[in-house]
Image (cartoon, rainbow, N blue to C red; front, side):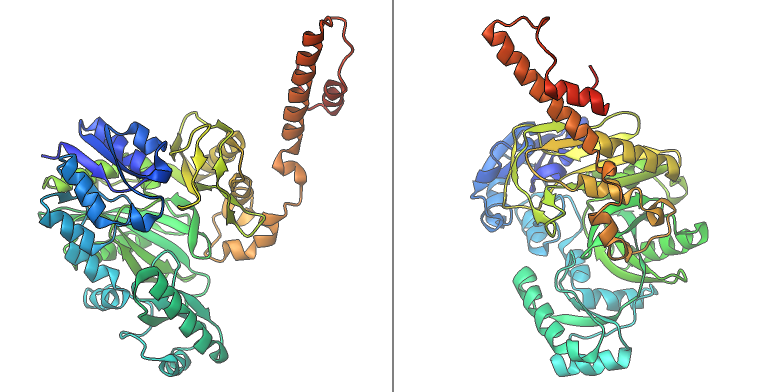
Length: 505
């Protein structure tokens, strides 16, 4: 049985895994870079081990250092989280060779689904519909141009080993093919060490729907229903929800069956995700498989009442699934917003820095998966996502109302965040009515960047905070000079606040 787990990751996902371990009576070991000495996952873990400099390649991506840390702390298993080495077949294989349980699928499964071209072939053989496109790697730009013309524009050029939107180029006309081909290969090589690319017909205005799947080592595979992930910017998800407002019960059943078939085709074990594109006519196509836990897994947990990390650990312990497909029933509605330290008005540039003040919302149906605290300095070296805000309510309407409220309560000062941007998303009619698709951000970009009503940004609240603080400073000055507070004249800051109706005394 697993008694001690090393989490080969950082940030909120490391803390989240450790919480489940603690509930199960399992000790946790954190690894950290020099930039993460004071990070919450280091403080929360039962044990911690420094593994190198700030740069990921010298710490969180160094397999040898992580294996040595696992050996040094005598762990039973290693959980990769997501990102970094989570879908690295070499890492999974090395863990097994060194005698550690890898909490995830087999290395062979990662290799089978990590190569997008090979995955397409497997899905076709398993009867899972795929987007029309090429079945072999492109040889050169000339072949790419010829095949684009055959498939018909628009066409999506994609990296075979890609993910996270990298190595992708959308092509609308023939004269753009060569430039897109060279750019996609270059980006794929620098990001994944492989410049293999292929073509798919671009499905215009689709929904990005993913199905959570769960398998064990005894041949059991089930799906845990869907997540709607269509609010994306540059192929990066921003807001997710479950259930999808677009999916019908009949389509959910059909897509779920295909998701299970896809997982069975590679003997999948553990938690994973089958991603689909669904067009406006509700025809769906396999997009890719993520052989790990997803960032947005909490919304599935909220609507099903499951802990996916605990399920991963049970499977790694060689236990059979304790839930059946017929036991899976969605209840209520959950929404997740990704909270990022970034400047949305400046092309979403990362905004690292020290958190001066942090007020996290709470209340019924509110969950925060985060790793920051007041006084913590967000490093410049890693992804700008600092946490996830999740709400659950009995209906989608109530969930949106709750998300509006908690985004209003969420306060972070000292750096820029995307919280105001997320507030605006919650008010866009297309989102409110559930009539959006992956074109949502592009369609409403101007509205999201420049709200019609400045009051939506709660400027009156900021004025009140400034007025109250200035009044406090003036009180300190007068007290220090011996002036009676009872006889002093009202300050102009307080007077201004009272006149505007924004200062409550």
